[in-house]
Length: 55
Image (cartoon, rainbow, N blue to C red):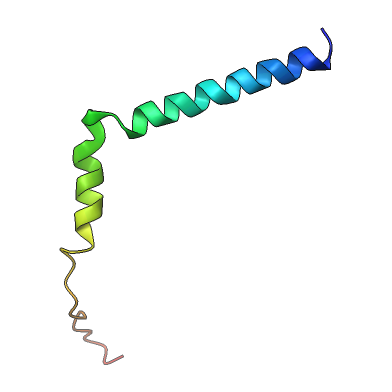
């Protein structure tokens, strides 16, 4: 096995990993999690908490 086989196997491994990540990210099962994360910034109160220590 020479270095070209190693390079080829590494390229195939990276491609398969990339496709797996795309599948996980674009899966319909995760849509609710991404929607909740996207909307969390809008649901945050802009008022500061009342600090009892006076700082």
